[in-house]
Amino acid sequence: SGEEREKPSYNREEAIPDFHVSRIVSDQSGNTYAAGYLGDANSRTTIRLAKYNRLGTRLWFIDHPNPSTPYFEVSTLELDGAGNVYLGLRTALDGFGYTYYKYNPQGQMSWSQPLVLNKRIAKAAVDSAGNFYIVTRDIIANSAVYGSTKYDLQATVLWTRQLSVEPGYNGELQHVAVTDYGQIYVWIYRGTIGNSQLFAYDTNGTLIINRQYSPGMFNGQIAVYRATGAIAVVDTVPTDIIYKPFSSSQQMNIHLLDAAGNLRWSTSYTLS
Image (cartoon, rainbow, N blue to C red; front, side):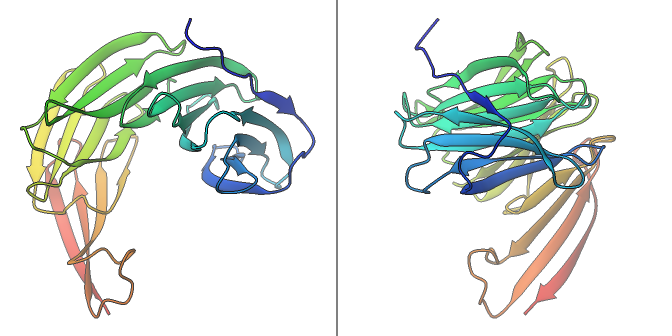
């Protein structure tokens, strides 16, 4: 049901050499998957997904044309434990729309779903078993509402949860990650008060973490050790070094949290 979308084309020979890669992931066998747009940056009407072996030989590629949309980009590129690849595309059609695709290791499509439509922000992750998770951020009645949904291998909804915050909040959905055993972590930056907030659901959708941290603690790079759920955070203060590289002094902080969100240790370095 819904609008009819143009089907992606499957190819084995290069059609357009101008391939701008925006996401890249690798599997345990050394194969690499790359996704990005073709052609000019101002007219991203085609998205390409390509697979390369450990020697750099391209095994296959798939093009997703969408000529009616002026804003078209890769939002997600993830792998599960079986080598299936998950591609998320964001478009400006219908406001902010997100469509997700699952391909097997040979490049054959398993499913294609417009799983999120008319959402302001959406981020996705996949666990080793192939369960797929999407977290969205909407503004409803001047409040930010975060919705988390878990899908099985066939893109059937297993559960959906919502978490709201106080009115007037205008924060940012920063990061979503999932462990191999299906625990999903969501980080948000609370722009009104400057704090960071972490919440997490277990594999059954039970809220197990909902904590706030000191201002800006998660306003940086975040990584999760998928086997245990340990969390590493790297941030810079007082300003982000990415945006102000010529600041006279920067302090880089490294934090390690356990799977329950408890801070285990921190260390700092001065950058000049």
